[in-house]
Length: 283
Image (cartoon, rainbow, N blue to C red):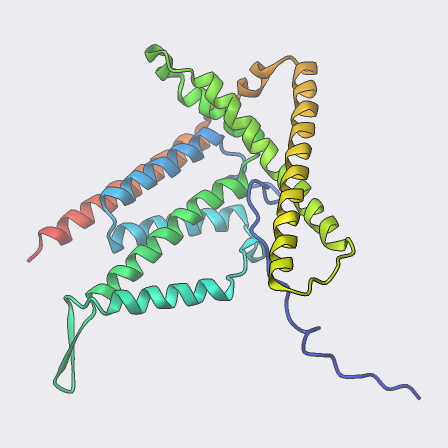
């Protein structure tokens, strides 16, 4: 007769979910099929709108727009990263510090007036930050990295009249976006291999600091070597495919769905501006 032991506390702990960026979510939807330039225009317009009208109404409408896009694109909850404990502590400390500033509106509790202005401003700034991060994440989760460079070259074509090298900028951005995930994987492999190497246990603090410094130098040297090797391989691949001009050339253009999406975004922004103006003028 065999007995099964109870699961340990460590085995039931969930592993933290990492940040998933520059990797499209598998599947297809209307949001996935939109032109990359349309998404960039909407993110830019929403950022400008939230800069000049950072009120609760604008934040709520943009958040609703992002939530609707996430629902249409069928973004799973698993792509959301886990919040580390230290970040919750920082947010709590920031909220407490902001709440001490007081301000209107004020609430009377037992003859004591408590100002909620600072806490509300902190909540508003936090919500604004979350919405902006969600906008960028939506572009990352629904757009192929190879489409961003050509879209930027197309959108910046009028800037060529000012002799701005928009094509070169688009190529540099396309190369950076393609190399960033690859280099992250390489650095993770290097770090894991470094941790597997046998280490001598230092006997003093000075020896520990010296060991950490040597490990950092070794990791930096290995990272630079890997980066140069990857850059050389990418250069050969680009040359074999016709040069850097191919990175900013893409025949994709906005379609009917793109114009409808832009119209919805513009209407949402106009509604936010109108409501913010009306409520601001009300006594």
